[in-house]
Length: 537
Image 1: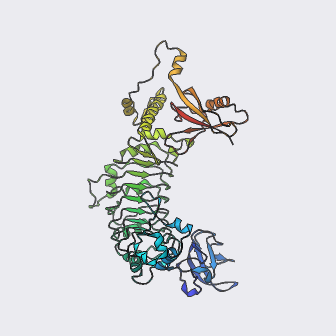
Image 2: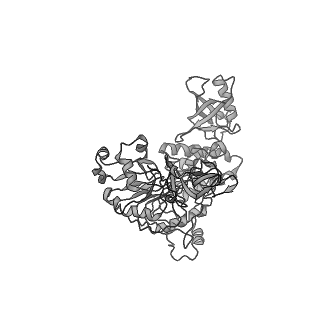
Image 3: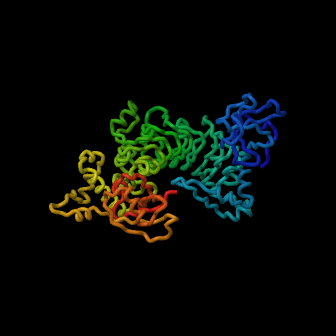
């Protein structure tokens, strides 16, 4: 790609990239002289924040950068103002693709995963440009696309594109996006991630065929989404990751209306802290997946009739018969600040919810005082996928039995504990576990045997070497501290203290057992559990 050497090529707020690196993208914030340095300079605020200053040099401020080290001054020959859509297309598909190019040929699936684009006649395309009209999917990511090019050029050369990835280019005007889309009548999936889009949505026609739109890291807010809503009549997936969204600002009411076909809404890695903001989405009838990972939520609840009525106020367009989140099947809440059991239990009230993510929240981290996976499974009556892992019939049965026994052990001498376990009575009656009362005349050894757990201890410590797993019968009331002492004996550890982990079915990583006062049953160790024995580093 050729650089743009004339300062007249550039204008304020224009998107540019480094001549030698199309992935180094920034925004022009200053054009003019710099004291002590001859000639014209371009002041750029770089997206990646890796530069030299904040827009000031030697005590003189030339522009305001986003951070202390995101700004720099660049000569015009070292900047590129971009190329047209078709120019980028020829660069990507005319030449033999590099491994980097191969890696870029993807779109985002419904689960937000990278799926390789299947290019029809891909090898032939490399040899014969006349076959470009056969392409149905293409990626032009990080190629410096800044404009649509000549009128009708796109429709003439690649008329059949259905999936298009424009990640990391220099697009900013919505009218340019509209021009591209109008020339691609079959386009259904569009990725504009990492393009800094204008806050003014003007010149954008109705995108009647777009079903998947990815706007991650584009600087968009919900006010703009309200404008886009009317221009996306058949949208099914909308990805809005990393945009700093902290509120759902609706145009005329407290509830989001429209989006009649929207099945998946991805709001991961934003700044939403109040669950009431999410409740504004509760009347989206077709919504099946809501991705809220890595926000700032600390409490959630299912809204009752009165809560919804207070939110809508006198909104006459509100349908009283609409059940909140009536078709929601997947709710991803990982990486938030949820720490209360009431939030977990409220998930049972969502009528169709079966896929839940709670990982990286305090409540789901036993190492920080949270509850283990088996308790989550037992408390969540209908969950079929938890933290990305399927909950099998066997896991549910074993989890519910362990949970009931755990609660029963806590009820002795503390009957109010039952208030913290809304499913306990239901599960106890369903499983058929009776209260454990020692019979008259039972000897001490017999009583202890009735509370023994079969636990497999498996060494993973380098200093211990390869040893076969040990299966021991231990009292349920054994503390983690006592278990560590026993492991020192079992595995002949003399110079180091053991470090214990519980290996649970369905959990990708073992759970650290570091509360030495907790009992085996407290931390979720049940019959036939496996404990990994490592050593302190």
